[in-house]
Image (cartoon, rainbow, N blue to C red; front, side):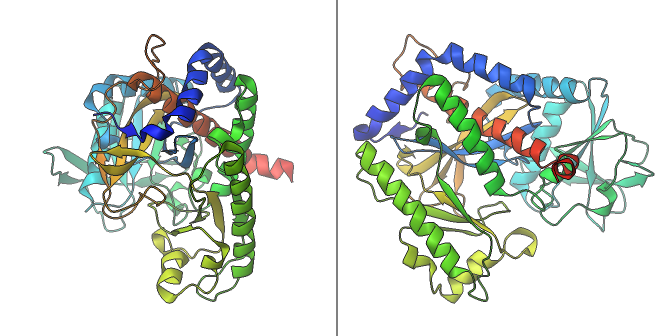
Length: 431
């Protein structure tokens, strides 16, 4: 099942895809050089938006929770990429501890964990699951809706290492975004890899820092292949003095929204785009599509009603929002079975390992699709994102998915830069 674009808008995107195809060798060479200088995250997923005239990432998750939505045919790619990641980070690893979220009632998330376990086991690692649940007293087996099982065990701390009863792992893989902070049991670990590093969690990470890193990466890449970086890069602004409950910081937010919309209108005029520009105001830290609103005029963020303020004031783990990123909205003209959709690309190490479509039957092409009521089409990617076919048209499935893979890898590279630059030792040295 391959989605389609509105026919009238395929021209500009076809042009961009053709440039990717014509410069595929140069692109892959450029990426190889980049990965020599930057350690890729162990894994990641990125949400893309395809407007026809622009193909850009709008979110990058360093603790992806949807491996269960990938096409089963891509399992070999996942295993190969995981093997490469393990060899790069901890080549002598034999035991790995997976630390998930505490979502024991979320069957979809648990199926994601089960899929991760199966991938990692096929790399030859001994995998066990260490839970942060405070009331877990011993090994507990969960029956999943798809027939598989998961055994959770309480984490144990021994001096500077963390493990389980009778299990001392070489490395700890987090599938927990640490929105509520780093638990004491994971602080100050010695001689034990934690991947991704704890400072990549949402207690410290900011979307605006990622956007800054992506802006640099996109500009260098665009110069390398000769395109306008705006075609792959959403504009953004930041407001760090907002309090939605107390109605403070609205002026800052309105100013940033107005400035960003003005820049977008100028680019739309340059490219002859007739759609109405919009921006997305997001909590600068957090996930699950919480703390998000779509805005088409600066006046819309002044005098928010109680429902709007409550929606924006708090995100996952009950954390209050005081910093927001204002991101250029990218329309999506892709549909699956008539419903608005956006591609989500999954990566391990620096490899694209598959993807799926997030679909929402009740949302428009200028709205956030990561919201209640969404569903996924795991079989949408019928071919992988790394094998373009120059004998076919630019919009043929392998080539469109190759374009997705290129932009997704740019976002992953930006995440790598972001992690390096926010590593506590690096921050201390810079200070």
